[in-house]
Amino acid sequence: MKTFEMIIASTIITLGYALIPLSNFSQTAAHRAAGSVYPNMPEIAPIGVRIGKHFDVPESAKGPAIDPAKGYRIQELGKGLYMITDNAYQSMFLVYESGVVIVDAPPSLAQFMEKALAEVTDKPVTHIIYSHSHIDHIGGARQLGGHPKVIAHEETKRLLLRAKDPDRPVPSVVFKDKYKLKAGSQTLELSYRGNAHEPGNIFIYAPAQKTLMVVDVVFPGWMPWRRFALAQDIPGYFAQVEEINKLDWDILVSGHVARTGTHADVALQLEFMNDLRNATRQALKETRPGIGIDESDSGNPWVIFDNYIDRVVIQVVNTLTLKWSQKLAAYDVYIWDQAYAMEQSLRIDEE
Ligand SMILES: [Zn+2]
Image 1: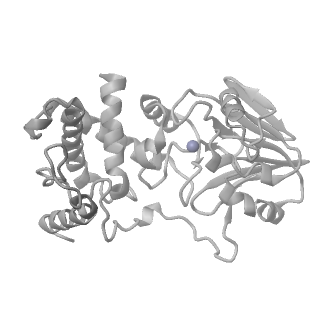
Image 2: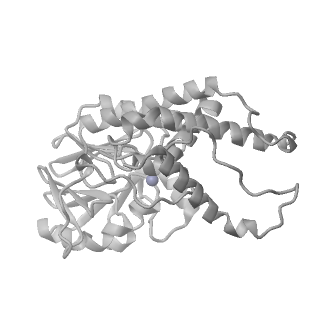
């Protein structure tokens, strides 16, 4: 473990490297190169600073290995329901008497889909459900071929009509609140719980298998992807993680990471999010704008606020690191991003 001073020193050195091109400019009153780092700078390198080695991924975040010769693995979720994953993306398929229902077709998995299905069944794909409109989760839909019925939320249809992307065929069946898909003796219950990650992102529940799929919201074992996985509505995102925590299910398919999720995973993520929100509220309360900026910048409100927000976020990162740095994989990769997103949301959404 490096000492705090060593890390600060290496951070300064790294910043120095980054600033070499800037030093070629003449330093006038109109523009000066960066000064020293903030006091009490956290050990975790801020956004834009490269470090040699990030924290190891804890065992708790790892999943079953992928056979490198195959590039994917299939996980049986019970009673004809399966997850297919490359340990980075996840989609599901449900086999019924006369066909297969696929939920999501990430481009990274679409190449394996035909082979994966053939391991389990020779029945045709009759339906595709889109969890939401994003390319990285459904951009392999066209590649699956055939003429399956495409089911999604009406907001997803709106976004796809706008995108005009031939790789993401526009849904032929849409719904507003709930939709129950009966396929032979199998059932999937689709529901829309409002905006969090993006409008139209739905919950997909398989009651017989007690499996819930919600994509881009919970990241079992991991820090959420940066800025709460780019949630378009952060208070909505917090509410949705709470809702997933309360619902009755046994297996969570989250669309990402190396394994399925449990209630303990959701509770842990929620605890992290609540700690982050509390720490940010506290830092916003304790921090005053306009301290430590160059006097010649005092007429520039963007500078005053950027400096203020930086100091809020530094306090947040310092508050959380002791408890959380080893609990969620990639804490050090995204804690700054999460703290900046939280600070912004608390100022404009809630306060
Ligand atoms: Zn997404």
